[in-house]
Image (cartoon, rainbow, N blue to C red; front, top):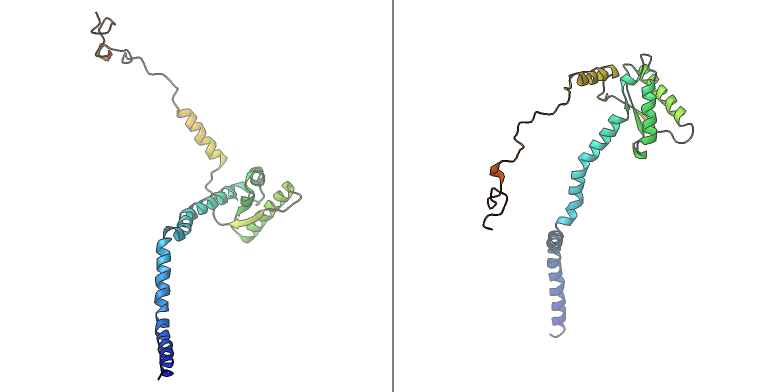
Length: 196
């Protein structure tokens, strides 16, 4: 009878271990939930910060693309780069941050026109940078918001022509102190009231 008791106890332990094993997924999930609740804001801060910063990074990239785009006005009818276009390339190569030294070329009306523009830009870049790694030259469909120098000159001259001459307003006497502005405890003759 004594031999059977340890065997029965072993059988009970083995039978109960499978029932205990069935509860482990729930216990693990509860443990994970408890850990998440205790560390709550920290795991989600990086995702929130990235969601806040991402639109601004896109805006910065779009701004650099707009700034570094050589639009249609910087090319001649024969798709040759103008002197203003060469100066803009020089600015990009010298002043733009290293990560933003990408030159965008507005596509022409035909494939041949676009190829001629890209070749003209490549020649200008290689003339400015005879050695070293050349910047990327990419074709874009987005035309930068620009206008011709003639139009800008007309706008500037019209602004100057219509600006009135500076003049001071006339004196109205409102700036002189009145008797009402004297402190209430001061007498009219300049002495303090109450002292005789």
